[in-house]
Every structure is written in structure tokens, then in C-alpha cells.
Amino acid sequence: MNRLAGKVALITGGASGFGHASAALFVREGASVVITDRNPAGAEVAAEIGCRFVLQDVTDEASWPALIAAIAAAEGRLDVLVNNAGIGLFRRIEDMTLAEWRKVQAVNSDAVFLGCKYALPLLRRSGGGSIVNIASVAGKSGAPLMGAYCASKGAVTLLTKALALECAAEKNNIRVNSVHPGYVETALVQGHIMAGTDPDKARRYLEKLHPMGRMGRVDEVANGILFLASDESSFMTGAELVLDGGLTAQ
Ligand SMILES: NC(=O)c1ccc[n+]([C@@H]2O[C@H](COP(=O)([O-])OP(=O)(O)OC[C@H]3O[C@@H](n4cnc5c(N)ncnc54)[C@H](O)[C@@H]3O)[C@@H](O)[C@H]2O)c1
Image (cartoon, rainbow, N blue to C red; front, side, top):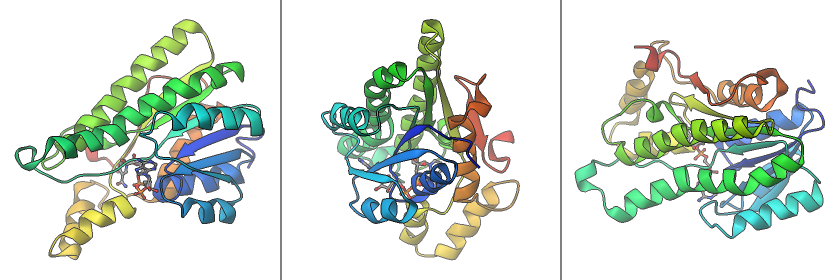
């Protein structure tokens, strides 16, 4: 308990999945948490776990300076940013429209850039902090039907390292790391499982991808995000935290 005592954390995509689970865990560990989401259901989630909700489409650039200014006014500081909001797309490159490609990059990659860019001044003013970017195993290796998603997560993986080095050079005490989960049955993955003709088969296929023989759980990912957010990872920056049941060890 209290691994985040006194810290203020901002988590995007907090209405569901990893964002919801890590917000609840952060609150239990003593942080003041602000979650944002484009889904208004985030308000109920925030009320349930005891944090603040802001309706935000992370791809809207103007929303970012307004959000950070509101946190500076209300919470007075920012110690942790978790760029978590994301979407999936399962489509062959050949069948994909440019609009579909761009939508995935806008949410999964451009918005991570925006979050980092606009949060940095407040993190710096707060004496440093931790940025945790949620990438994926798909940011480390390719997968069929996942070209747009892989490209977006690959971008997050290397943006993370580049920013980590900029911050280290500035000696500003801001660490930047990425998290690479394997498959976890959140709404994002459930959408894919249910879209096919045989959901049980799709689920078994995803389970078997992991050498441990199962998908991950949201709490297992939230624990990794907590470690990177906390001072326990104080010598870690520009690194990839892989939580994938051995998937990318093969
Ligand atoms: N579930 C997995 O297996 C898995 C694996 C690796 C990485 N990830 C990544 O983890 C992150 C969280 O995904 P999840 O699995 O918890 O999915 P999820 O669908 O449960 O949650 C994603 C949240 O992001 C929000 N969101 C989407 N677009 C948004 C936008 N433009 N503005 C604001 N909010 C937006 C959604 O409303 C939702 O609440 C994503 O970046 C995803 O790519 C998921």
C-alpha cells in the first residue's frame, strides 16, 4: 500500500480495461488519479474507484493543454502520465483504407505524442515523474491482419526511447518507459473474438499464442504499470516492460 502516496496520476482510456484496472490500483496505492476517456461511462468508473473523470478524445490536440491546465489548477502537480487509450483493427493491409490506417495511428500513436508533449512542462515543474506508454507485443513483432496496429505500437516503442533520452539529457528526473502486454480479454480483444464465426475457437487460438497457455489478466498488466509509475523503477527509463506469458521469448 501507499506505493504512490502523494503522487498525482493521469491515465487516458480509464473507462475500461487496463486504464480502469490501473486507476483503481493507483487509488489503492495512495495516488490522486484523473482518468480521461471519450466514453462518458468513465464518470461512473471514476465515482466507483474514487478518482476524477474528464471527458476527452485523446486525438483532439486542443483537449490536451486544457486538461493539463485543469490538473495544474485542481491537483497542483502531475507525477505520472499513463498514455493508455487505444483501439484495435484487424484488417489485411491490402483491404485497409487510408482513413482506417490513419484512425489507428491517430489514437494509438499521435495521441501518445500529444500526451507526452503537453504533460512534460507540468511534470518538470513537479520535480520530475514517470510517463508510462502502453504499447503491445505488437510493437515488438509483426502479426498478420494487424499492420496498422503493429505500426502504431512500434511508433510508441521508439517514441518512448527517444523521449527517455531527451529527458535523461536534460536531467529533469522524468522517466519514460513502455509496457508490452500480450493478449488480455478486455473490450478491445473481446470485440475481435466476438466478431468471428467461432468465438471459442478464436479465444483458444489467442490463449495458445502464449507459451504459458493462457491470456493475461488486467491486474497483471496494472501491476506492471504501477511498478513503472512508482519510485521502485527509479533507475529504469527508455525500457520495455514485457508482460506476455513468454509470447515474444520464442
Ligand atoms: N487487451 C489487450 O490484449 C492489449 C494488449 C496489448 C496492448 N493493449 C493496449 O492497451 C491499451 C488499453 O486497451 P484495453 O485492452 O484496456 O482496451 P479497452 O477497449 O478495454 O480500453 C481502451 C479505452 O480507451 C478508450 N479510447 C479509445 N479511443 C479513445 C480516444 N480517441 N480518446 C479517448 N479514449 C479513447 C476507450 O473508450 C476505452 O475505454 C490500448 O492502448 C491497447 O492497444 C491491449
